[in-house]
Image (cartoon, rainbow, N blue to C red):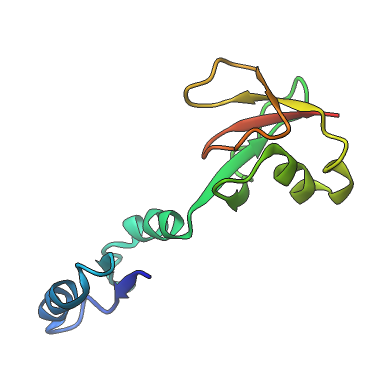
Length: 127
């Protein structure tokens, strides 16, 4: 669980945010934001994404550039087979391997169907 304190632009909000942190900060991560003033909103998206424990994976067709504006979002721990099923249910059993680009990998590294996807991976499926 995570706690978000809102309306940080209202009178007394700083004290309420401090109270929220003092009472619950040891049990739960807390964050305070103001939608009106925009305070904390840049952090909120990353904070929620981490809380949901998701990964963003980008796909590309052979010889094409990936579309970094349209990631496939999956739970952390998802495999290449999970990605194939998310794209098209019939692909789950037909994917043989993929090439992956991402942190800690060399460009176009071959990975098996059981490869665990990492946030930011770019995948080219091979059937």
